[in-house]
Length: 95
Image 1 (cartoon, rainbow, N blue to C red):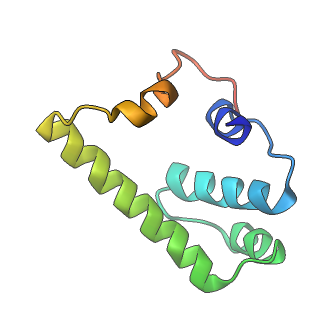
Image 2 (cartoon, rainbow, N blue to C red):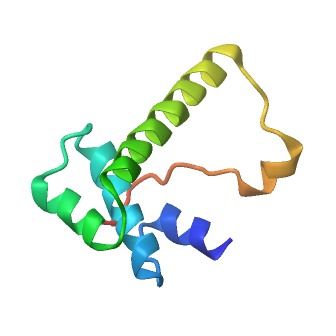
């Protein structure tokens, strides 16, 4: 649960490997897939592989398709995860 709160708030994660994954994923989303060589190198230096970088892309694609589909279909949130519902902040000072 702390990791979810940290990711949502833009806070650094205490585990360096998780933080590298958070940063790379964030970069891929914000830059619409245009990570720099340095971004990829930092991800790989944390012990990830190029295949795992592609898995980040796949995860982003699946999540985007799911969000769009559920938005159109008006799919209700499952009761099991309703306590984790996220509200977009009005303004964010996160990195």
